[in-house]
Structures are given as C-alpha cells and as structure tokens.
Image (tube, rainbow, N blue to C red; front, side, top):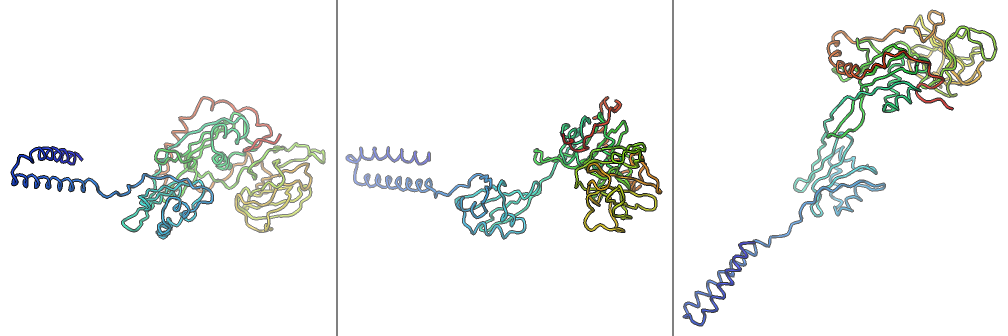
Length: 439
C-alpha cells in the first residue's frame, strides 16, 4: 500500500515537471519523457493488481448451538447454510458419529465453518467422550476424544438428630449416598431399632472433575458409623481386575450371612420383649421377635440365603413365610398381605430377594411385619445375635489392601471430633430410618 502511494506521488511529480518542460524541449527529449511516463503507468497497474487480491471468505469462530425441542441435525445444518450432503457424509463416519441422528433438546453442538463449508464439528457423546469431526480437503474425518478425570476425596460428617435420611441430607450427603450408607451397615446395624440420637457418621466420597469443573460425586470410598458408642467402619477395595467390594479395616468382609432387618424403610412398633402384652388377646404372651410397622404393600426381603420351608396361613401369624438357612438357622415373616408371585415351598431364595409384602393378616391391629430369628429351633433376638461373615480379603492381597485404604482411614480420623466420645442419648422416637414418620 505504501509502495503504491509512493509510485502515485512520483508519477504526479514527474508529470508536472514533464508538462512544464514540454514547450522548451527538443522532439527527442519529448519522446524520452513519454517513455518514462509509460513505465510509471505500467508500475502503477502492477502494484494495483498485487494490492487487489481475490476476496476469500474467512473461517468463522466456533458457533455454540443449544439444541431445542424438535430440532434435528438436518434442520440445524439448514439454519447454518450448510448443504444436506455434508451432514449425510458425517453420519457415515462410524458408530459415534451416528449418535448425531438422535440429538436431544438441551444438548450442545459446536460448529466452525467457512462460507457454506463445514470445517469442524464438536459434540459431547457423554460426560467423558467428545466426537470431533474435521474437514480434510474434500472429505470429513471423525475421532472420539476421551477426557481424563481428576478424582478428589471429600469427607462429610453428621450427627443423628432425627432420621438417618434427614440427618444425612442436613450434612450435605446426596440421597444416593444416604441409601448406600444404610445398605452398607445393614449387616451390623438395624437402622429401625438401633438408631440413637447422638449417633454419628463420617463418609469419604470421591468427587469427579473434568477440566477443573466438578462433574458429580463418584463412589463411596469409606464410611464410619458410631452407633450407641460402638464404631463400625467400612472401606472400599478395588482389586487388580477392577472389581470392588467393602471390607472392615482389618480385611474382613462387610457381608454377613444375614441382614439385621428385612425391610428397607421401617418404623419399630414393638421391640423384642418376652413380657409384651398382646394387643388383641389382651394377655401376656411371649413376643419372640420384632414388629416392624410399615405401610401395607412394603416389600419384605429375605435376610439371608436359604429356601422356603413353609408358606401359608399359620394361626394368629396370618400369611407366613418360613425360610430355612442351612441346618441351624431359620427366619419367619408374618402378617403378610400377599406373597411374591411365583414363590413356593422348597424354592431357593437369595439374600435381599423379595418374598412377600407387608399386611395385617392374622391377629394384627395394623399393617406391620412380625420377624423372628431362630437358631436350632430356639428364638433369638436378631439384634444381639452374632452373625457369621463372608470370605475375608485373600492373604496375597492384604498388602495392596492396606496400602489402598490407608488414605481413607486417615481422612476419617482427621474428621473426628470430641463429640464422638459422648454417650448416646435416647432412642429416636418412632421414626423411619430413612424417612421422617408421617405426622
């Protein structure tokens, strides 16, 4: 541009000088001046041609498109001025690219284009994988990039002052983790019968981050529950094959032969008491079991692996299922409203499998489950019985186990406070373990 201005200025100056001299110069000198002027004009034309290059559309910046209800890949390309041939070619690039056929409202598509030509496209297949499409000459190429996740542990502590559900929510635990906490310790704690005001819990959670932003809470890594002064701990161990399970800090399995309670969400209406007055017969009758008040239709689960020894009506028990667990143990579930479909005498059952539903059959004043635990035919209090455990950590994995759980135990220890040493107070009055009782 500067060169062109200089040439124009020079040409103007020479032209003025040439005109001033024309009348005083000889013919040969005039011819020389004409040659100079023609050379200057040629130079001007050449510089102009260089300066006036062809106009080419520049590549746009990335355009972020949030997909609205009813929009498809074809309508989005049409709105962006991109031909149908381009999106059709992209859908032929493989399985991940074909997911663009089912884009949903709220998802995001990012485009970079030049004129009516798509240069690049980005689409998150899920929270970790991103589809990237690039134009290479006259065709498209697709690749799937997987982001690396950063994992950070987070410690949360709380005190029981109502139900486990409400106390967990108050402490900031996700609902999923509250439920997992109850499931984790259900072998050792009956959250309907054993829960006390002042009990405390501490959990170590995994938080997942992508590019510095938190995606979500991950797995529960470790937990401690102090119930009536007794400390229960659980730690997750992932073996070399990626399989994970919970154990006690000394490598014993958390899983036992029996759950403490056959219901998930319950309220206790009467405790194990051999001098309990029967509410209908109005006589003192041994109540060799535990009553769990629950809504009619609440699923009843087998507390251990076994088989159906009896299924039918049994006097004041109403509809009953009796399970046999090996040669020593037997459990009874009474006052059912109905049995699980397909269940029959002699059928095998798994721990946690639904066998029936809460009702008020037999001598019952309201819907509830009557549960009994027997050892060698003798009624035992299921709260106090020592349950056999499943297999512990293998000896050849103990070193790896101790190394892996050490940071989790350290975090639980660091979260402790003097309050843990206080004696538990009164029993939580008639509330559910996981949900507040209906008022």
